[in-house]
Length: 305
Image (cartoon, rainbow, N blue to C red; front, side, top):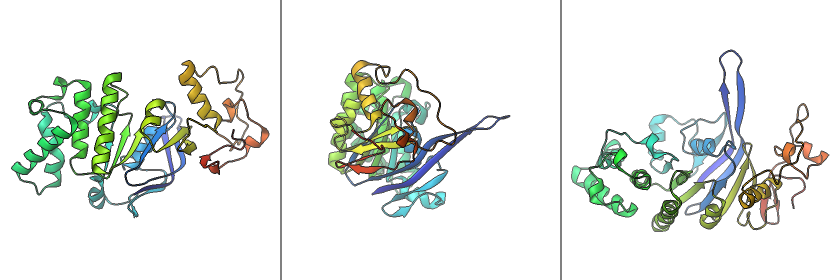
């Protein structure tokens, strides 16, 4: 369904002295219909940037995104609009994507209005159906975003994302701003909607337990790269960074897994991105490494355990 090849994104900052930072570096991934893929990693590893490139909110510096075999990158906006209903992003903070002056009903109706071809009666019926699907009641229609709880606001955004019957939802930390009990409700609701509609789901999260519970596959990101990918990543982690993530959850700190002296990367270094922090590094790790199959999983490491 969705395929990304060698995606790369570079951010540039600074007025006097230009500084470039590579946020995503050579990422390949493929999402099959009805599949749930979780992407995990620490803040700043490139997860959200990757999500924006997948839904065409951010143009990659290089690489391509395909949907049902059609290349989306570089496509004109007129042609791209035909596909954007099929791929929807559910953001971390719903406040950033809703108009505070619009009622909930108007916000959820917006995709039908933009798409065109719907009568007022059809739009009203579709909105009622979407409200029921995400657990909102008729009384929410006339409310404004500031009158909703965090969970209600996120459900409104999910309802709007479902309006044009997408085939893929990209959830970028969609539950991280919510209370724990509400997080569980939203995740359960998304899985029920996925099962009912046959959606593909990309679930970007810091919550490793949630990622393990909902996903068919897990992708672990570090420094803009996928360092490990597989179905049982958390049960049998092969990459040192994946083990560090699991230890961080277990001990509430990464200090237990990082070496005392990290040192500086050698000049012209092109090897493992985790080299500086890895306790198991050797000179071999200074050489470039691609994802390779090890025991049925993909791992970017010369000496996986």
